[in-house]
Amino acid sequence: DCQRPNGQLPGMAPTSGWGYNWGSGPLFDNFLLGVPRNVYIYRGDSSLLRENYDAFKLNLQFTKSLAKDGIVRFGLGDWCHYDRSRAVAPEFVTTAWYFRNLKIFAETASLFGFREDAARTLDRAAEVAESFRKHFSNGGGSWAKDEKTALALPAAFGLCDDAEARLSAALLDRKMREDECIADFGIAGAKFVPRVLADYGYENTAFRIFTQEKFPGWCKWIRDGETALLEDFAGRCSHSHVMYGDLAAWMMQYPGGIEPSFTRPGFREVVLKPKFIDALHSMNAHYDSVYGRISVFWNRTSSGIELTASIPPGIPGTLFLPDGTSHTFSGTQHFQIK
Image (cartoon, rainbow, N blue to C red; front, top):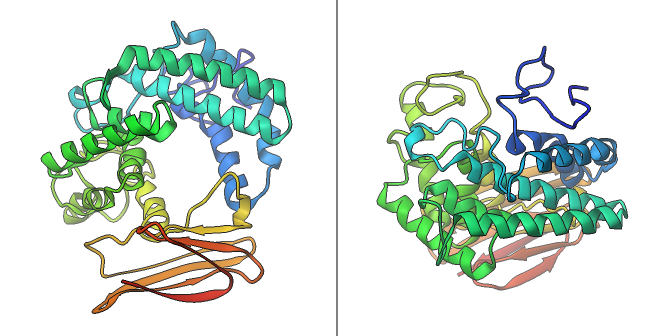
């Protein structure tokens, strides 16, 4: 209802008019298709994706009108970094998110059989990716000024090949450990720095980001007596805000291993990929899917790790372990991992 005829969205909805020319951009525009996409992934219901399809298509046309040489210089960027002088340039984040939005739209177009939309959007995404690499890549996994968010987003969004993504993740791991794993990023990095680290084998570093007690960081809030998530690490804004809340989803997906997927909507097929964090003695996670409860419990013993996985009856499941082995199962099954 808040979308303008040219496709522009506000940074907040509903709005009395605020947020169109400040507070929006590709990162925030993503909610229009991102929220329905998550409903599809978690519940298997595509109706909201279809309902918002044309509006998001129009929004991408608006974003294209803002881009110069494929670079979008409109939007908040890595918002609420504790020190703006350390944040990656906003155009890095907004262009990366523009690419991500194009990929999500193409994926959605393919889901509904709109092949021309999908092909046209993928062509545009390829153009944006080429421009992004030209402007920001230093080669060898290095991006921009090697800010933490800059090292994470290309790997997370597919703006580089797997070989370069691995180099970026290794550099990100080293830089995070050099800085004692402080949360040296804004809301964009808060979601994808820990995910990229875990995806490329540095899950212990990612977990340390969440548990170290120095400023800036989540546990510093706890030490200061906060009882809810804050809008920023310095405590200058709202003291009840979900912007840094992705750590809960990270815990479910990585130590818990319960992995959502666009190609397996509604968990009609369950894939479990638990990461056995060195600092954790045990992990207990569950998700109530439309088919029933999915649960994972593991704990360390003198002989290794004992894991119990349970999925709804009749649903196929696969457990992938860090050593590269996999096990298909259904119902409840116990595993002994050495």
